[in-house]
Image (cartoon, helix red, strand yellow):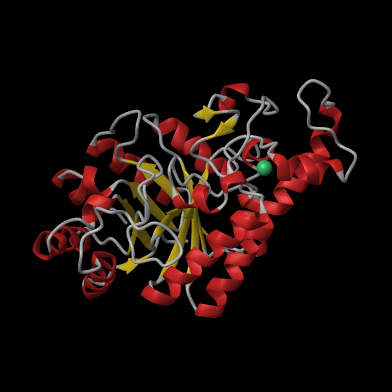
Length: 341
Ligand SMILES: [Zn+2]
């Protein structure tokens, strides 16, 4: 299958530009053949609210007058680029409005994860400060309403989900009560790890149910749905409850983008090759993309590496590549994107 999509994730600085400079940046992306733009609705690190006009949650006080999200969508469209706003769902950041609206929505990580280092999150009074419990009905309802509000108000080409995972293994009040109904005790002192399978199954079902609800929303509104997911599958299942391969198999997403961020071309090659062996990902119900980094928290790759990694994704049959992140792209990278595919 020929690669047909090129996407970039963009941080909020793109929204905070004046019209002329915003247009220049979009023109640059269009010249690179970019088809999909994933602009960040809010950064988990900021916790300052969303960058769009919402009646349901805090709007970032720095969000400029004139509603630049609307302008960005319109201008991108003028350049032939689809906009799929990028929601960092279950890691809204400390101080986000959801924590005031639902004070018991904090995730609680108490060492149940098979990767205990993941439990060393930002904690205060035994609760995680920047992750909500992804499984609570009130949290899922709030985020579903927020996605619906955005979709109806701005009518983008699609919605792009990120942090559709639980962070680590949550044992908040809700999760504890629900598991008690199955006779499973989550007290770290008395917890029996033999119950992990049942607990994991329940967690995966709760999260998949949420994705199903979002899918129903986007179907109703005629929008595409995509997600950025952790590339290690099934390792994400006992931790993040993120069974994205099943989501793809069930047709819950139009596009799935595993984040294969690496300085190692060989890692990228092996990971994509492995993904291509999963029947659910290749059943034709969901487009498989390779999510590549230009620059992440670890560092940047060179333009030559980006070229090689895009070529690998193409050779291995990915239907698209998405690059993190727009504001790190050099002129050389733009050239690479333009000449690729
Ligand atoms: Zn919970």
